[in-house]
Image (cartoon, rainbow, N blue to C red; front, side, top):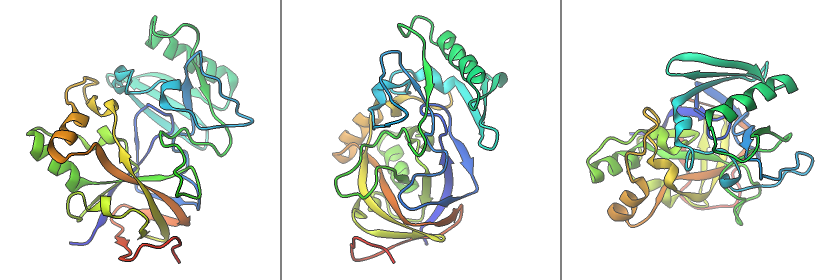
Length: 267
């Protein structure tokens, strides 16, 4: 059975809900367009949009600490920079992230959403070309922006190990794929992979944290995913990061072809 893309997602605002994509164009050295473009910074966070630097997730609103975020469903119109927020099936906010007034109303919404949760106002932050990804730049990579990939067979193996369903979106990946043996993706480090018209190089396995405890459908902490990985498989890994080395479009259904011999470049 060939390895193929089952689903593609982006996360325009760090910590908020995913958006499915049928296809997307990848650019060398970059993550998916609009992925983690915005973040909701805590009052104590110091972020300079003129000189953006990587900051850990603890500086922002995030699922690992703020599981109630999973109650919200968001949509982002990139052409208009328009963010729509729904809660329990009802639209509660639709505002532009392009304009200061719209941002202030979004920030005020989250201030009210977390009553007493922050000592001061939250704020929306962004910087041109910057992504608020969880991963710090890897020492073997040429960029700090990655595409995350998860093998659905590995999730199935985890489900079998713990005897409970595990929603793939707990792991907030960009690309979910099928057709590969469980955990085989952990052998792809430093290998090149071809997907559609793009070429990527796998730079790291993804270490998982307590954010995966949160059920994306119920916003409840109902599974100890990290503990289950350690008990069942002796590690806390799920998925891999890859850097884009040759741009091109990828789409659901595209084959993922791995090189047998590791190499630093992909023609």
